[in-house]
Amino acid sequence: MDILNVIRVFKQYHEEGRILRVLKDVSLSVGHGEFCALTGVSGSGKTTLMNLIGLLDRPSDGKILINGTDTSVLNANATSEIRSKTIGFVFQSFHLLPHYTALDNVALPLVYAGVGKRQRRRRAERLLFEVGLADRMHHHPGELSGGQCQRVAIARALVGKPSLLLADEPTGNLDSRAAGDVMSMLLRLNSALGLSVIIVTHDLAIAGKCSRRIVMRDGTVCNDESCEYRDMKSL
Amino acid sequence: MSKSEWTVGREVAREVAGNLRLSQGRSLLALIGIVIGTAAVITMLHLGHNAREAALRQFEILGTDQVMMQPVSGNSDKPHVPLNTVVKIPEQNIGIDAVAAVVQYGTSIRFGRSQIQAIILAATDKIYTIGKVHLWQGRLTSDLDAANSFAVIGAGIASEMTASSGRPVRIGDKINVGSRVLTIIGILGDATISPILGIDFNRTIVLPFAAARRLLPSPNISNVAALLSPGADDTQTAKAVTEYFSRHMSGGMMHVRTARQLIENIDRQMGIYAALILGIGAVSLVVGGVGIMNVMLMNVMERRQEIGLRLALGARRGHIRLMFLCEALILAIAGSAGGTFLGYLTGWVFASGSGWRFEPAPLTLPVAVGMALVVGLFFGIYPAVCAARLDPAIALRGE
Image 1 (cartoon, helix red, strand yellow):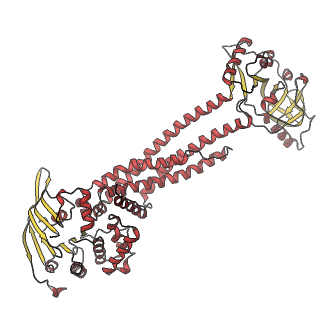
Image 2: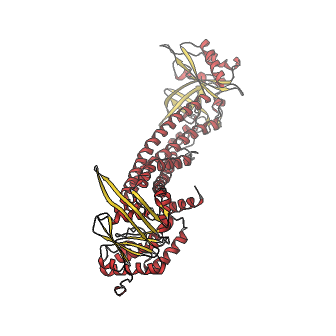
Image 3: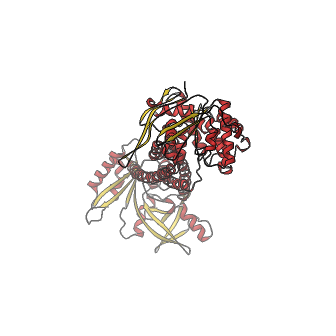
């Protein structure tokens, strides 16, 4: 069973009397442990598709199956639960809460999983250790570099033990070195934890490191290719 | 709500409490509204309660069996009450045990070189029993003294005379009232003002009733003090007394004042007071609540991205609602706690300023807690619902 099936999904918005068709008949499947890059020019529907996959929005037509569960029939609380248990998000602008320490930011998703404070902190500590920020636990985001912030955000995405990680331009706000660090971390997590990753990117170098590249154009998937060998030399 | 949902709700509430930043300027401003509102209500509650307690404490000391009768004029005539009629009241068996006819007026007296303001009270014997005053020195006046210029002075007058002359007042000392000279035959002990009789014995000089003629050209009975018989029904007695006098006096009627009427008056005033408190409370609730709602709505607008993020991280809409409701409640509770403290303080200051014993009003704490809950819930629910309705995908973009 695939972690994700997108089946004939359409999405349209009504704007000032006009109908804006953003996704037109998109279908794709992502297996467990796959590492996909989602690329395409601006306005091709990448972010809309990511929002649908992340259950932050609902398709106008079609189905999205997470781990075989049809999400179109679920109510808001049930989709919240899938987000909490199965999906991890990483954003371009990190979205860390500025008045929380790195530790509290990482522990935040566990609040909604009903985990007690002590347990939350213990799990958050372990993840910050894994992303190499054990010595920055009690710093606030303002005191961290962009690369460190994104590593905190990755730790936060992983703290709920998801099986699908959605990263929307995770390296977009970083310099090339920090971007390389973040990318190699994602690849390492992918191989170590068997985590499925979908990463939206404009950067061809980043996309080149992914085993599968999905290219979108004008609301449809125009190219979906897998390479047998990841470009290991650049890691 | 299932157990696990309850756990999540508890963790959400705890997380809010642990991370709330009250130091934000506008939160503090919103708090001031609640603080002032609560403080006003709490102060008024204390004031009302303590005023009532102070009034009732006098009844505790003096009992509730005193009765004051006051002739009031009808039309243009001056009311005239014959002494004989007054003296005969206890014989009527209408619930009155003792009476004292009183001629009362204020004047200034001379003692040595000093002038002292005093109340002259020419009264029949029973005035001491009815007024529940005790003798400290010498003897009391009696009807047997007839029109002799004898005087019994109150404790306050005595100490003022002592202060002005530099030596203690002695029995036999003379005081001048106009051109008349009075001889002091007794000094009263310290007395409590009776709310019914309205006589401050400390500031009073008591003469035999017949001696009034020496000071006033045509003394008229200004009022009649009386004591109820044990077990007498005060309402019926009052009616009977009015009826008795309507037959025996001319130029007006007798107004009768009993403890029950006075206490009823106090309670009526407290009722007006309570309505006032309710009004002030309602206004301050609305003002403070709108302040909180304003702050919370601004918070929701400013924290759209955070709300989107929390939804993405697995929060349910109910958790977002709970989070903002908790914040509003904490603001309201903090404001209300501050206001309660301030209210106690001002209540205490007012009470000690008025010479009352400060006693916290019994309803204060429930009222304060209730106000906080009402304000927090009522004015917090709308911003919380707004926050929970945000579309996570749009909120995350932060546009």
